[in-house]
Structures are given as C-alpha cells and as structure tokens.
Length: 427
Ligand code: HOZ
Image (tube, rainbow, N blue to C red):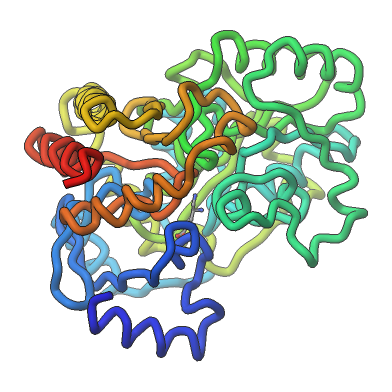
C-alpha cells in the first residue's frame, strides 16, 4: 500500500471508526486499505502519494462534470467570500428549486435538504402523514440511505458488508417495512392488489444502483404506478443516483413514469452536500410551515451547495446533447468490458443504463437482488486491484456502479477497456 495512504489510514483508525466516514469506502469488500485521495481534475484523481488514476467512482455518481470543473469551483469560491450559511432564505435556493421543478416531471414543489438519507426519510414521513397509513414497501437490494425503516434487505454497504439489518434499528420500526423482489412484475402486482391498501408508500430506485446497476424490467415501473394509484398509496422514486444522471428529467423522464414523490441528491449538489425531495403542491404544502408535517435543517439550502448545484446544472444544460454523449460513452464502455470478459475467458455480464454501469462476475444476468447476490465477489476484488495497478479507480465493491462523467473522453473509455482486457487476460 502506498506509504502516505497507509500512514493516514493508521492515524484515521485511531479517531474515526474503521478510518472512514462511510463504510463502503473502507474497501472492506475488496480487501486491503483504502487510498486517501488528495485532489481531482476532470476524470482524474490523485492519491496522497501523488499517484494519478482515471476515476470511475465520481464520488458515487455526484460528479457529472468530473472533478473541480473550473466554473463550479470559481462560483463556489466567489460565494464563500460573502457568507457560507445564514439560516435564512437566499435567492439561490429559489433559482435551484425552479430548475428542479422545471426539469423533473413529478415536481411542483421541492424542499432542499443536505443528504439523500434526509430526503428519503422526509419523503416517507410525508407519505405516512398524507395517507394516514404506516406500512411501506421497499425492494430487496434497493438502498435509500441509512434511514432506520429502510435498512431492511438494503443494498450498497449494507449488502457489501453483510449487515442487511443493522443492530440499533428497533424491530418495531422495521415491522412496518414490507419487502419484495425488484422487477417481479406479476408477484408485486399481486402483492399490491392484496395488501396495497395498507401501504403509505412504495419506495423504489427506478434504476437500482446499490446492488450494482439493475435496469427496471419492461412494465415494472408502470405496474408500480398503476397499482399504487389503485391502492391509494404513494409511489416514491428515489432518484438520488438517477436524477440528472440518466436524463435531464431523471429516470421518470427516461421511462415515462411519474411518481408522487421524488428524492434527489448527488448530481444536484455539484459535489457539495445537497439533496431534495418533492412532489405535487398539494402534498408538499402539508409540510411545515404551511402544514403540520415537521421537517427542518440548519444547513438546508446551504448557499455554497446551492451555488455548486446551480452552476453544475447550468453547465450540463448548456452542453449540446449532454445525455446523448453520456449514453454513447456508456455504451462504448459496456462493449469494451464485455469484450474484455470474453477475451479473458471469464463469465459475467455488464448491466448499464446511460452513464452508470456494473460489471458482474460469474453470473449471466442480474435482474434482481437474488441474482446480484450470486455474483463472484472474489473475482471482482481481484479485478478491482488489477485495475488500480493499471491506474484505473473503480468503486470498491461488486454492488456499486461505475460512473462516467462529461469530463471523460473517448480516449478515457478506450483506456478503461484496455486496462480491463489486460487485467482479465491475467497479464
Ligand atoms: N451510498 C454510497 C454508495 N452507494 C456510499 C457513499 C460513500 O461512501 O461516500
């Protein structure tokens, strides 16, 4: 392990549990200790020992423009000079809210918060208040942040680290959480017809990103929309990853299915802590102060985060065919990774939606959590370290997504393919 990262990690472990502030970044799923990163520019990151890597983690999907886009950095720097937080409304929040409402079909109003976890937690509270019901349904392998009620058969770190139900989450809280299999169109239809009347909400990542990438099966999202409408429960799309990632209008625009409530995060913060949840005016006005449903935050709508988010979205909007470009870079990456698997004589498959993709080892298809959990995590771990040695930085778990940004070039994608081919051929 590089010297400086090792030194920092040893020091970190004394003052931070496991040396990290979020478990998946500990590399527990792939072995060895994490690299400490010190800077990034466009598609490249540099570790604490000065080694450069081509980055496909992109801060877990937050960096649609890559690292440190000069206009975003300048805008944040400028904003910081005139105050970083007031705990009072600022004009920028309204402008960002306007962009979100205009872009995302389900939104008439949004409330800004600081993390995806806050967004899903608040959306659930609102759904329960609005319907007067308590139970909710989520899908195995979908991850919605570390909200107590949603840490049931969850993806991401909960899946990677083998702790689907965390100690400290009272059984009485999760007793209200029902689970079903992602993409099981007929099974879930039946369940919703029988039990939908008990549910305040069905929450789903419209493209699963936390058991690795899994696209919705044809008809799955449409079925959820129809059946929740009949049952009088709310459909919540967790678009923390997919919002402004798989289309300007999110997965709901890409697939043409409009939920009642939407959670956003990652891209909309332009690399700073910012998230949002929203829906119709009638629902959102049930929140305090217009309504009785309490939700609040000292740093909600933080001026720095709002500036980073607004500037990022402005730049994306100015780029002609930004999402076509992300799609075509993604398609080429998918093709090259498939070829690398075949050339290396390895079994596996590549799942992709736009610029988010996962290379699963040892399985031919992954359509849900049980198929994802059969993936060969040891092969992934070897691949991860092999790629690192080739100068390519991937998410440190089989059950996460590679993210491509607008800073990646065609040459970067070819380099990803060459590295994968070299690693999988065992060179
Ligand atoms: N929730 C992220 C994985 N899907 C991990 C965040 C982090 O470790 O930074």
